[in-house]
Image 1 (tube, helix red, strand yellow):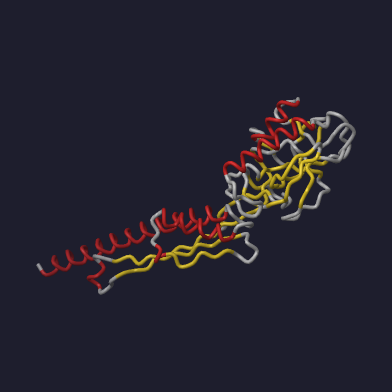
Image 2 (image 1 turned 90 degrees about the vertical axis):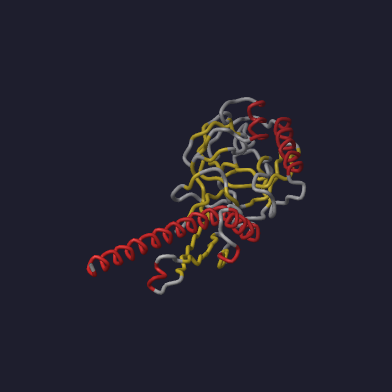
Length: 289
């Protein structure tokens, strides 16, 4: 009888420990997934807006069930290209209390960062920047204006040809995808009318949606922040095939005559990374741990 009692007590203790361990693992998974979501959401604001990255990460963590007291730290790296969210949770035990244990602490650390995007980018402008252009955040660039080859002022025929298709792609972005290495056709001709109309429409839409937005502080969906393909223009004559060598991100400022001006910025885009892609400002966000 005593032996049976000991067996029952031992089994009860083992079952209790299994239940407590299962609960600990469940709590850890919740903490882990919420920390990952917070880090990824925060990283979308890097590197230009580190304060917004931290605030967004905290909001997402709280939204996903992490208590404020459970957030140990949200740290942006010195180069503003990574954000790390560290959390822990005290989990009370119920059955293991029989062994004198009161609680356990589970923790999670999630890091997300940005890297150059180079494949399957959507919504790009039909304006090809010369690949010999230096790209520095905050630098003003002219997307059009100079003749980049006989009959070419920087226009690209994405998904079709002609002034109307070109203007629509400026206003809303090309709906297809582009990747480094793609051959694309040029859209020859100065086309000052479609260019100015498309850029002006886009800038006005940005002002309507985010009137206080600037190149260094704006909502991520502000259409004034536009992805632009970087192109090798050498040898282009009339309607020609040119090669995409990378992507940059610009904040549209104005269109006047043949000139379209913008400021080079750096932020997340709708696309994927590509090995060896040049870092010209168009970025992909990914977990790094």
